[in-house]
Image (tube, rainbow, N blue to C red; front, side, top):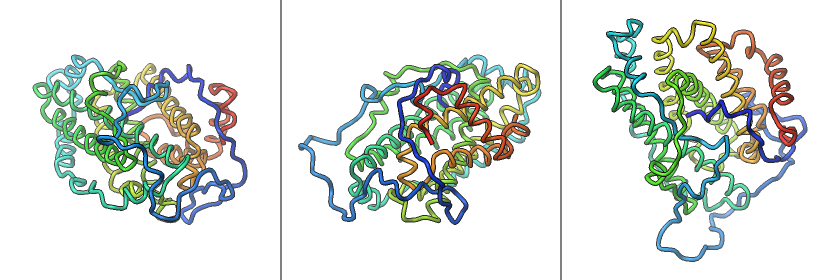
Length: 366
């Protein structure tokens, strides 16, 4: 799920490390972080770090231990009554029920039913990590788990609320919530490799929910799911070409995992096409442009604050984001043809964004 993009202009991110120099390229043409920069270490043996004091079980991290910022993954709610009206076939004659029926069969197939199966590599890889690398991976797993669980909660409620209005669309939402729950559970299991866990039941009850109108849910989620596909497949291909950076086995699952993101994006594409008022008038075009820019900038800001993570898997953060935006732009449902369709225009956009939206300390980002 996307971060609350409309709050972006209030951001004041923390200072980050500066990284300069010409990046090397992988065999797949993706940027490698400069190898002479050493920010953390993976021990060569499988020995674990010094054991912490014994406890009755793994330490659990609930909501109270998650640092809330404007870029923290959020939980969302929406106008469910309006959602019911939008997907009422008697009211909305634009609904392409045949397309939704075909999508439902795709989701029922459940291609990844047996994909998310762990093995001993996970714990062994976690035990080899120490220092900043271990810390940044814990944050990666925590944020990713929270984001996936956010999607599960919203999709589950939409599946429940739309059962009578449009059973086919409702069942797709329920099956997407299945996917998100599977992803969140897999990530939370990853946290257990580091002797941590998120209390997802506590988060459900205690976390604040951000309200988005249905059309904003459509814009942000469509973009987030499609961007998620390109991020996952890019990381997977990079690490396949550069196995020396494969420091944790979760990335080996990204090739199939990203197909879940792609299917979710296809579904939201169908939802948007069934609601032409969200795409075709001048207000809709302005909103779609706003969300397109906001989601891209939010991704860029998030990644710039976590340069150490991307360097840890051998990627240059800025070049990675540029690659994702360019690839995503070529297949975007709305507004990309002139603004983000070339490396030159994208570089200019990034520069102008840094000048106009980002605070001075963000200028240290690569």
